[in-house]
Length: 125
Image (tube, rainbow, N blue to C red):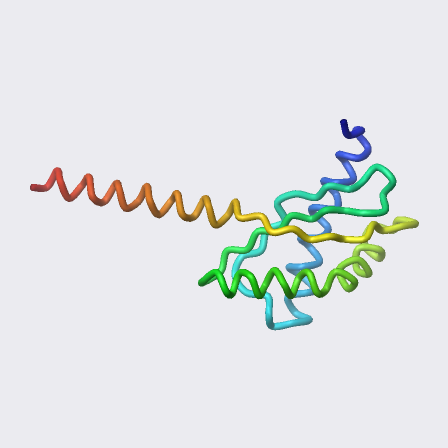
C-alpha cells in the first residue's frame, strides 16, 4: 500500500515528466511524433526508482514505437530537467514502460463509429 506522500509524489512526477517531454524534449529532438501521454508514474518508497508509463498515439505503430524509444533513450535528459524543476535532493532513476491505453481507446472509438455508420446505412434502406 502506498503512502499519501508516495501517491502525491507519483502524481507530481507524472505531470513533470509530461511537461519535460512536451516542452523540452520535443524541441531537443525531431523524433517525438504524435500525441504523447504520461498515463502513470509510480515512484518507489525509497525514491530511487520511478516507473513511468507512456502512451503514444501517432500515424502508425512504427512512429509510436520510435517516439517511445526516443523518450526512453533520453531518460537521463528528462531526469536532469526534473532535478531542476522539482528542486529535490534526489531524483529517481526513470524506467519507461509502454502503455497502449490510448491506442486501445482509439481502436474502440473507430469500431463504435463504424458500427454507428453501418446502423445508419441499414435504417436508410
